[in-house]
Length: 279
Image (tube, rainbow, N blue to C red; front, side, top):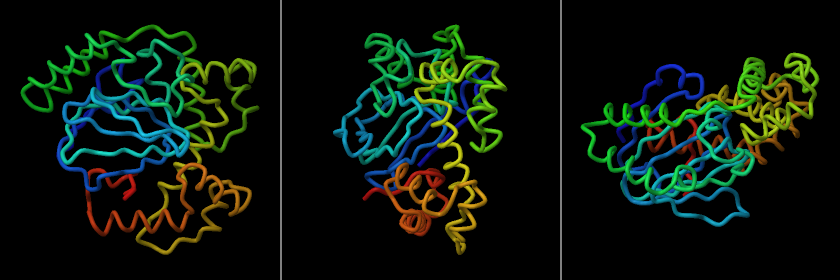
C-alpha cells in the first residue's frame, strides 16, 4: 500500500497529528482497530468500505467517507479489494471545531462525512481531490478545506490543556489532580470533555493508560504480563486483563497471537502499528 502523510501548518497542528493519503490493497479484508486517544476523518475516493462499531451495532457502509470521534472500543473496518482515501488523524479534541454537533453524540457511532458537512460540500471536495495531481496536492486541498471550516470553539483551550496533562502522565492521573490543575469543578470539566471529545476525562485517562501499555509491548519478545500490569499502574493483572477485553474484545495473550500473525504474514506493513486482522 502507498501511504503518504504530513503534519499540517498552524493552527491545524494543534488539532491534528497528521494528514494522510492511503491507496492500495488492504492486507486483510477486515481489520480491527482498538481504541486510541485519537479521532479520525476519512474522505473516501474508492469503493465503499464498511465499519462495525461494537458487537451491538450493525455493520454500516460508507461511500463518501466517515468521521470517528475518539472511540472507546474496537472498530472493525471492512475494505474493498482496493482502497483509496485521504484522511486526518485528529488529536482527541481535534474534530470539535469542525463538527455541527457535540462530540458525545458521535461516541462509538461513526457517521458519514455528508452527515457532518453536507452533501454538496462533500461532493465538491471529493471531485477536487479525485482530479488532483498526486498525494501531496490532495493533502494540500484537504488542509485548505479544514482551514476554511475551522471555527472558534468554547472550552477548547481548557480541554486541550487538561488532555495534555493526561497524555503526559500516560493516563496515570486522578480526576482530583486534573480539576485542581484546570481550576474548574469536576462536573464542568466532564461536561466540556463530553462536548468536545465525546468522553469524560476519566475515560480518556483510561484509554491513554491502555494505549501506552499496549504500545510498550514487543510481540516478538517474551512478555511478563504481571510486571507489565504493575508498571502501568493497574491494581493487578486481572484489572489489566479486564481493560484489554473491554477495549479490544481479546485477552492479552490472544492479542499477542493476532499481532504476531500480522507481523509474520505482512512484515513492515504500513498499517502494522495498531490494526489487527479480523479475518
